[in-house]
Figure 1 (tube, rainbow, N blue to C red):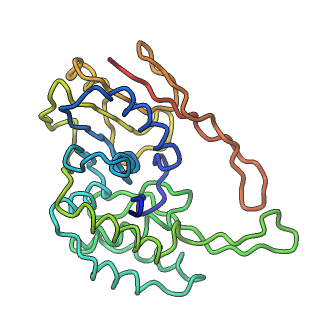
Figure 2 (cartoon, rainbow, N blue to C red; figure 1 turned 180 degrees about the vertical axis):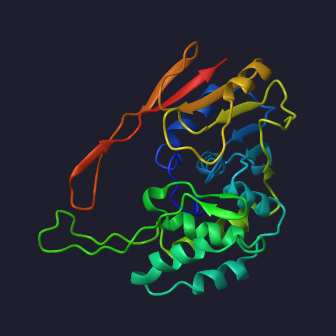
Length: 278
């Protein structure tokens, strides 16, 4: 069976380290039988999808996100996502060298409530640096898009840089696999979790992937300290760029030097820590 993958690239997404995080969560809870796993600020869904790839029943997973990715997961849970419409929107994309301009113009339009999920997937895939795109007052925010780049004779990088990550056909295939396996089978709350009371039981597991401290935000804030105080009898796993006090801290991944397309080093990425409250 094909492994499920997040549809698009996503800054702060956990696709690269999801296996490491899920390893820890499952090993920690191997004797816990009657539980649900709450994936808070799930974004592109890397952790939930990895749990499902490991054989966890989708009905035991509760995905929570108030962003547009939350709208996507909500549409999968309610069987309202339309693969035919998604294909139609993908087919409107121009040839590879013109995709950046197409997405930029699309982002200037008022958000179409009937097409926002489909447009979001296209724009998020093309987002420069994979930065999170969100909606505010019926307008798309934080929008800048990748250009198609081809190496020159003096370039250190020898392969092209595509304007979307992944490219359209791969996005369609990933969404199709998600649709086929999870349609009407996952639990999703597409609401502001600061204002919404989740029905979490004592044996349930909570994983939180909030916007990291001192990094680019996602258009909203999330107070995970509130959840710790409210659900202090649960085991809570929190991804952060730093070790949090009074918790078990596991360094999942050290920062990696990032370079531009010419090979020059710009800066290091953020460390990835899994902090465990219990």
